[in-house]
Length: 260
Ligand code: SG7
Ligand code: ZN
View 1 (cartoon, rainbow, N blue to C red):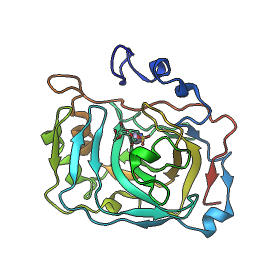
View 2: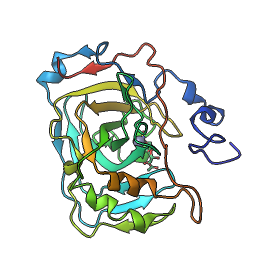
View 3: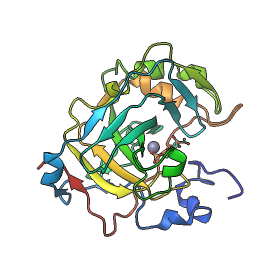
């Protein structure tokens, strides 16, 4: 690609296949999640996802030009559910719309949410680093949390409060308060869908076990506006908005659900 990938007409999701042929692969993400055609799996219900997140001191928050991302350094881990072995939290970031009616990558019964939070974990039992895991079929597990506009999210405020410090690509800051990533999870994590998929940005590796929670979280209008105010270049640039890839065909894959 002559220009860096992005979300504009010239470099957006429909153009990625030119530089990343796997974009047309059979294990791509996101997808539409049809609750009706998902398959209840009592093994998932019997073996709940175990989430052991640790509070982060001085967590780094960066504008990477595509999103706002917070990098974890503690040994926060997840296991159980669809996962074999233990996966360690590496970072979280979000995707959002310019308007409230779009923004999520996964859609649920065809419905878009205003944003989607991704908590990215790598298989630390099998691989030493995320760099080693990122292109392996069992390398990553990503939690997807749907975000709607409503009540202010007290925990997420730590992130939106520093958005103005990372308004341009490449800027980073540190959270002054200890931040526990578990504050971002929906109150109920027992109900989710899972399917084998990919990174939703180039290089689109087919390495992700997706776990999309059925319960959403709410953030306020001011909080989503803080995300929409971020810019995609070092200087000047455009607002980072509509930084989502639309759903791809599910193909032969099944989406399993943990709750009947
Ligand atoms: C965001 O989404 C970044 C990427 C991330 C990518 O653009 O947060 O992270 C880095 C370190 O650049 O890629 C490997 C990875 O986490 C895709 O992540 S996603 O599939 O969860 N959307
Ligand atoms: Zn993402």
